[in-house]
Picture (spheres, rainbow, N blue to C red):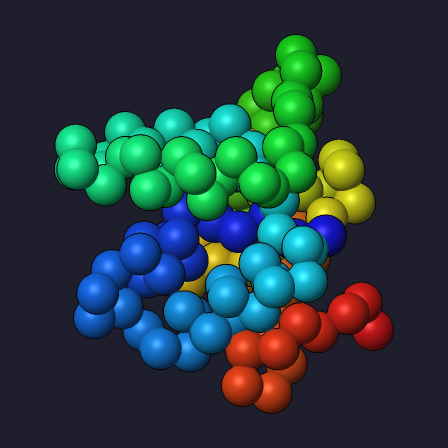
Length: 139
C-alpha cells in the first residue's frame, strides 16, 4: 500500500498536471493500492475550489484510510527534531505524513523533494511507479 502525498494529488487533479504523476496515481487507484491519511486529505480538500470538492471527496471515499494517534504525532515530533538536527527544514505536515507511512509500513508517492530528503534521514520508503505508471509492487 502507498500513501499518495498531496503533491501527487495536485498533479493528478490539475488539468495540465505532470502526465507521469497522473499515470502513477491512476495506476495505484486501478489496483486499489493507494491510501489516504488525514494530513493529505486536509491539504487537498482545504486547498480545493468549491466546485472541485465533491469530485475529490467521491474519489477519496473509496480509498483505505490510515489513521494516526498520539503516538504517531510524538514520533513525528521526534522526526522533525532529527531533520532539524541534520540541517533540513521540512514542513511539519510532510514529516507527519512520512511518519504515518513509517509506522504503518507503507511507502509514499510524492512529487515533492522533501520526501527524498526524509528517505535518507528518517528512512521513509518511497514508491517508484512501474512502466507507464503501472503499479510497482514491493521489491
